[in-house]
Image (cartoon, rainbow, N blue to C red; front, top):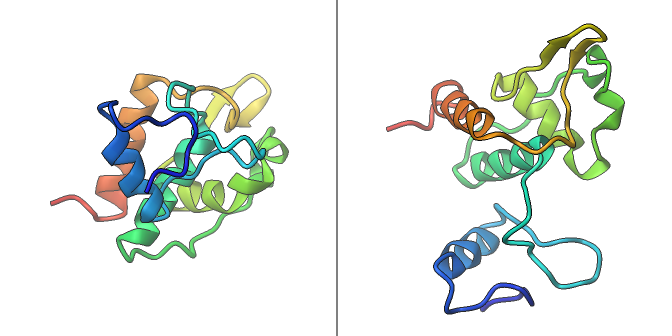
Length: 131
């Protein structure tokens, strides 16, 4: 059953979103709109949430944490993503960026294709889910 107002059965990603929602891997917006936002960009913290949820679905250890205050913008991680960002950093799925202002996470920045590739690679090699 589709629970999103903006995900239509005729679209190529319908089954994928429905499956990932049923497994608790992705969620829609928590703003009362009933929307998923299939055409919206994915932030770095959103990707951390998705990968942690997938790891949990696969039965992986998701209790790894790290101190976000080691990063100059660690306080900018949204509440919904803190646990996932702590896990992703602790497992090495996400690494910070060295900047003149110190090491940063840029949690609200959109993920580039390169970052997504690196995060998936890091997930597969460090969480040991690769086949």
